Image: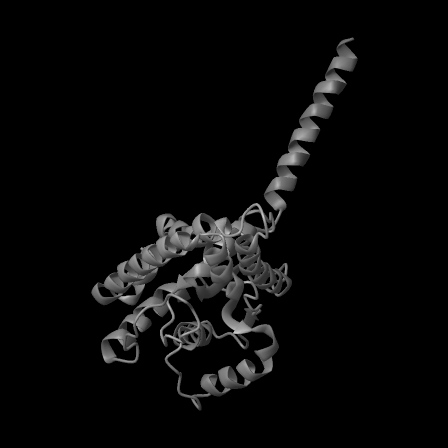
Length: 272
């Protein structure tokens, strides 16, 4: 009995050591998700900020400060909100910029993404966006009118405009680093996602579910982006930075947090 007990203890100890070793040896790529405002105000969103001059000397100095902080991550890849099928075009522009033959446009994809990649001496910048048209959006207002649910869209509009005004005020009062710290807090990320989940999802519920299908369109786009992200990360990559419109971050963060190949890094742990 003593011999058997000794063997059992040995096997349990060996299993514990093996399990612990396996957990310690599993490599997880750190990924920093930076939700941004759109510097150029592209007029593609229903609710968006007023334009600020991000090419002004003060903003340019703030960008240099931000890049200096992010450079300390020694990231292996920088990913931006550009369509996957435009990779060759972006490669050409980034290559020209790396050789000081291209002047950056006002877009945050270039002002932050290109600058950072160059500071990190990266040969390539990754395009991971995929645009799915919100094909059910045009039916939402029609359905809301038919189902006497226009009050929901009015509440959505009021909430969204207040949200944009809040961020606009923060933008005017803060540096670019300060803006990014603020809009990437848990509270602000939840506020953005709730516009879809609290309001849109109600439209047509119980009958045609147009609102839910519109929300599904938004999730589909972000799932496609997520797919592009994870397929462009190699096992050797230790740290990746993703720069994307703030509205995408809550869903992308949820997806990546539930993939055990990754460790999501909080913005405010980097931008102190």
